[in-house]
Amino acid sequence: MELQAVKAERLYLKVAEQLSRLITDGTIKPGERLPSERVLADKLGVSRPTIREAMIALEISGVIEIRTGSGIYATQKQSQQPELDLGDKGVGPFEILEIRFIVESEACALAAARISGDQIAALKLAIKEMEEEEKRPDASEQADWKFHQIIAEATQNSAIESIVNWLWELRNQSELSSAFMERLRSEGVHPSIEDHRKIVMALEQKNPEKARAAMRNHIDNATAAAATYFGKAAE
Image (tube, rainbow, N blue to C red; front, top):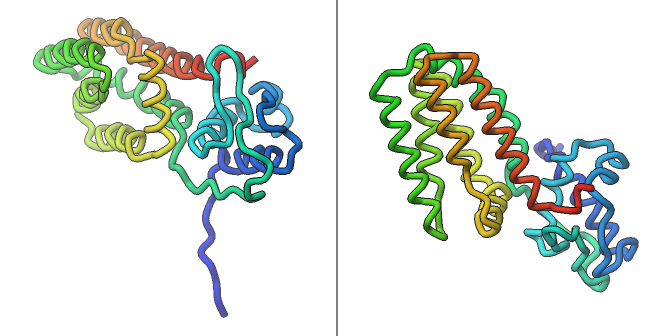
């Protein structure tokens, strides 16, 4: 008896494969604009972040072109192979932002009660490094990662620290997330310095409620900034 391992397929890949078939069979013609993110989400019964991640996968594969401020257009010719093997491109950026919102907000609240003066100073230094990174076209966002890493350490909980670091590593290891972050940087979207300052202010005041709210606001803003890449496609 021959058995094959069962793999859980990522939801955005299932969506991307459906849309790819519509393009290759001519239902959506080359150069034609795709339905909006809202319409696709309703018809497919998935979240709008899932639609965005499917679009990123299709853009990486050359099936569509995302034109910021205009929409999303089919680029693949009908003469190409009818079945496009998209492959697993890793966890999507919006999924990662969603879990970071849950984990890092609570981590920040816990850190507010336990953070040291040295760690506050290290956070302020990381912000200065972020400001320097933003001046370079090849900004790696290492300072941003360091900032969140310090907060995780300040919780004095090694499990939380491991989870937060793993989430950042996951983002960098994912082809989908890495490619999307590179596109965002090319569009001039960078981590908000002001959001990071507000987080430090709440931590310095040792106020868990303010710290939680500041981190939630920061990740909400990061998600909204990432969504602007899709422009009119979301309407």
